[in-house]
Image 1 (cartoon, rainbow, N blue to C red):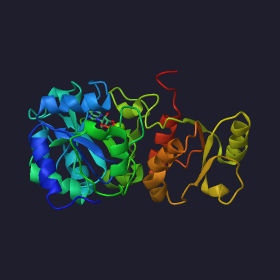
Image 2 (image 1 turned 135 degrees about the horizontal axis):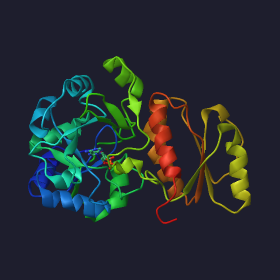
Image 3 (image 1 turned 180 degrees about the vertical axis):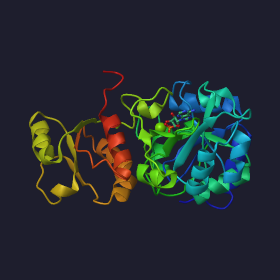
Image 4 (image 1 turned 135 degrees about the vertical axis):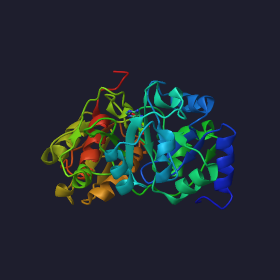
Length: 325
Ligand code: AMP
Ligand code: MG
């Protein structure tokens, strides 16, 4: 099931030939193209159905390579890269000349990171360049955290799928704008605000809306097919029963505080009390509700600290107004 010897070489060859490779990272699976190949990058947007103005993340194999891809490396960016790479932190910096505008959605900034996954690092090393990749799902939907999720969603549209098992972190990277003097979080993710603040030695702002175009900030994103309804934890059971009475096929994300509670629904997932386990499972839970034909998911937000901040952000986006509505 997992990448066999030879698979990594084969995937690197696909990238060199201008093809698309889905690959595992510690956050979610990425849909990768050679970052320096504008035609291959254009295909990523086409396959995802993503507007070309929404930038991708350039994945690098080594912290030392950062300077090759950005115009300059400010001190703060250097400190964050050294502390958190390889890892679920993406730095937005000034675009280096190597990066085509296709990969940055036309912006003069570029998002870069070194992923913490042995298969991703082996691919980046075998390929030798940067791999531009968003998450390997259709625009607006739930990110894939297993190779099966990728195959189910993208099928033949991707030239090669590298299987690296289930993603350990399960939610996307934290995106930090490090272009100015004061860094800020553009998207909460796998590296927590608390971890960033401990290294920086001062509070960091988390923007809920950004002047920079960040797809994670679209009204509805990270969304399953089923509609997501957010209520206070103590109202989850009553809300589910109400929806059931109205004829919905209901899925419930049962908060840890209600563990063991009786709840009438078509599918119930007991949310793990560990935030790391919740983040790891979140997208799989949402996909499972879709698989079971649920049309409505009742959930509540976790406490918004540490990984709970990223989980709450994704649940809010999943519950956001649909573009078709
Ligand atoms: P995805 O994980 O599919 O949403 O794709 C990559 C993420 O990186 C998106 O949320 C982008 O908005 C973000 N990103 C890439 N480049 C930039 C940039 N220059 N400024 C801000 N965010 C960026
Ligand atoms: Mg995405």
